[in-house]
Amino acid sequence: MSYSAHSPSRRLGLVAACLAALGTLAAQPAAAQQPVLNLYSARHYQTDEALYANFTKATGIKINRLDGKEDELVERIHNEGTASPADILITVDAARLEVADNLGLFAPLQSKLLDERIPAGLRTPTWVAFSTRARVIVYNKSAVKPAQVQTYADLAKPAMKGQVCMRSGSHPYNLSLGAAVIAHEGEAQAEAWARGLVANFARGPKGGDTDQIKAVAAGECGVTISNTYYLARMMRSTKPDDQQAMSAVGIVWPNQASWGTHVNVSGAGVLKNAPNKANAVRFMEYLASNEAQAYFADGNNEWPVVKGSVAANPTLVAMGTFRPDALPIGDLAKTTVAAQKVFDRAGWK
Ligand code: FE
Image 1 (cartoon, rainbow, N blue to C red):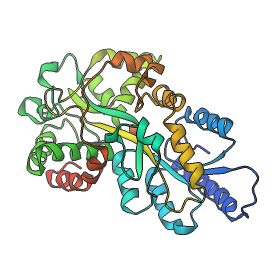
Image 2: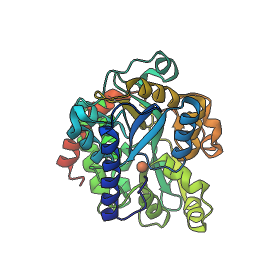
Image 3: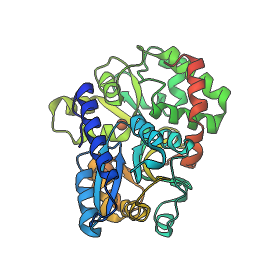
Image 4: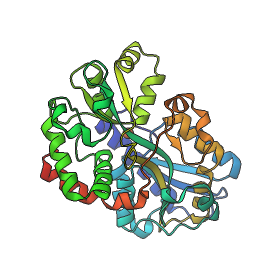
């Protein structure tokens, strides 16, 4: 049911087909022999298939998966209300999980196992993180010296005039980063930072993180900010273009001498109206297992939240260690609305 490679119109058709399939499923009497779990997923990674198949093999619980875009899934669950067949929402970015939480979509989550396995800062009372990604500085080695770009604040300094490429300020990845800046340095400082960044833009915001990395590699700009899994993906790529791009750029773990590198998450929560709550909790617990954690590490180059599982991906191991921001992910998520206002005022489109 994955459609991520298709055109928008084809996507909509497939979503409709998927939703219809789930609708039929929900309308059936509860006499189905096999226990089921209805998973709404905004993760479009091939390796997730194996993850889900293994869960079914281990538990006998069949997974009905509905893939969709993050915002569409949240809206769908909201509109379905008490009739929703959805048991779990799994998605990326704390800001999006917060939107779902604010709509009251999640049920309180109680699992001793999850409390034990997942670090406290990566859990909230309703949703938990299963993997993390860091937002790092990427610079062109012939245009910028690493000493010039050791912090997020450095990118807003006059020395970087005309050097900065960024994706949209409305994108959740940047909103979550903005939330971290607000949490540590206050709103006024965050706005000054955003204004400085905008003043340093080499061009207007466009494209995704990979586009920014390629623009830096090509010398279109000197520096950008990207999620680590995009970098790891290019490092593991056998395409000559990717290899060439990676040889032109350097990576800095930002803010190591202050509040640490901003990290975001991929996470999930059990839904308030879940028809199969017990199965849903079992699935959440499965995602915290060593096996599932290794899939997160290797499949999408994300850091697993359970220690040790990182060994599944040598590229992640080779990227080394860094000090992540210790801000609880739930607190961060709540500040993303303020971040959007700050970016709007600063003109970061
Ligand atoms: Fe992404």
